[in-house]
Image (cartoon, rainbow, N blue to C red; front, top):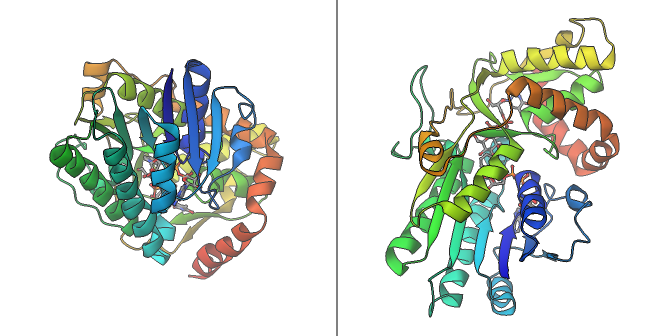
Length: 353
Ligand code: NAD
Ligand code: DAU
């Protein structure tokens, strides 16, 4: 029996990772630590909440006493660390929240693991989940590899880059057994509608403007969230200590091409006149410091650990739209309250520009 700590398990990616581990590893005891910020939602895990090998703990990764006690109480064999502030636009308006959680929170977990495991590091594992945004922005060609120098350009990516450096420093200095991955943009069920794809689905459904930043020419490399969770499983079990693995779908889309594809799918599913949802596309003021292009080379992960993405993007988008259309209550719950205030500040002003 192994006991694993998964942080941020009530969020978008974390909820898929928790479900995969709870379901596929009945002999592991999974502890999900999450502060339940605006992005954390226990509804994401309703189906496995009663599983005998699952425990939820509400708490903040930046709380030193709390995290130290948690490690003492549970005697963890491994950590999969996903908890973070994750939205680039919010990092532009409130960078310190990102420094606090992503940098200090990660260092706090690393230190608790170091102290708890100091007499026996063998067989332990600290897995840090990171992003391709640490590599900066690409021009029209090329890919991010594990050797690409770090060049973070937003407060979000700077905070993630800093946390990656702390993880490697704890490995190098204290011998902490770590593994890292840097993944491209995820999409799928449970995605909070502040991010492009769920926000567009939500707005199309409600006949509201679809805000496209700048000219819509920025490129992202999209991966189905369940394929990211599968990669995390493979890397956690088979990755080598101290190594980094890039995860991505080789699936690049300009934002505007992606939005047009979503409009087509939504017109068909909602029985609307073909082309009608595209009329909602609204070009708005660009994101400050907007990275032009991300594209991941995941050949190391494919070659060394045998992972490959399982789903074609068009099929994944269809599934994602279906999920949002049949989970209206989930959307209503997460878009009530603070979301309205966020939307007003983030978009209503932009739409006027
Ligand atoms: P998310 O914002 O949906 O979820 C983050 C979770 O962390 C939430 O449940 C939140 O409550 C929790 N959390 C935040 N602050 C906390 C704190 N101080 N203490 C404890 N819990 C806290 O994020 P996501 O999109 O699921 O991303 C998860 C991880 O994957 C992040 O580390 C992110 O950087 C990384 N990542 C995300 C993507 C993507 O496309 N979403 C791609 C690559 C990497
Ligand atoms: O690359 C991995 C990263 O992907 C993760 O580390 C982040 O946590 C995750 O949020 C995501 O970051 P992006 O900034 O790429 O995702 P977002 O969905 O916010 O934006 C995707 C693209 O769409 C980006 O070029 C900005 C643009 N955009 C976004 C929103 C929210 C719009 O044009 N309009 C919008 O309303």
